[in-house]
Length: 118
View 1 (cartoon, rainbow, N blue to C red):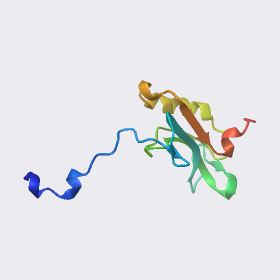
View 2 (view 1 turned 90 degrees about the vertical axis):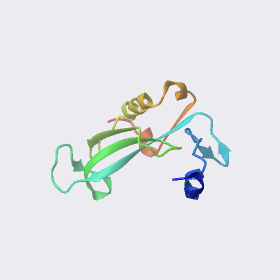
View 3 (view 1 turned 135 degrees about the horizontal axis):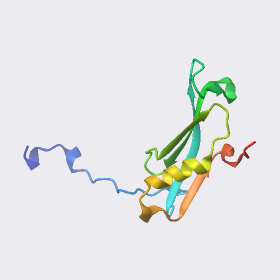
């Protein structure tokens, strides 16, 4: 295919390899990681499935995503309502990040990230 025959989509600029996270209209320096949990619903008594909050039943996976790309860096499956280890999933996520970008890291979590293990 010749250059003049290519669709306009082929000439769009490529996104930056490390798009920056933003807050209040300002670019945040460094790396922003979000840690949150997701309930994977199971209909049977599978291994590690347990009753969860909100009357569900299943496996409770703790996930870590960079704010700017949407790619999952780490996941830690655990029983339904267990206090999962945020440090473990964070360590697994940081291993996926190139060493040059492992500075000025901001970690965000919901209220469960502040819960004490029982």
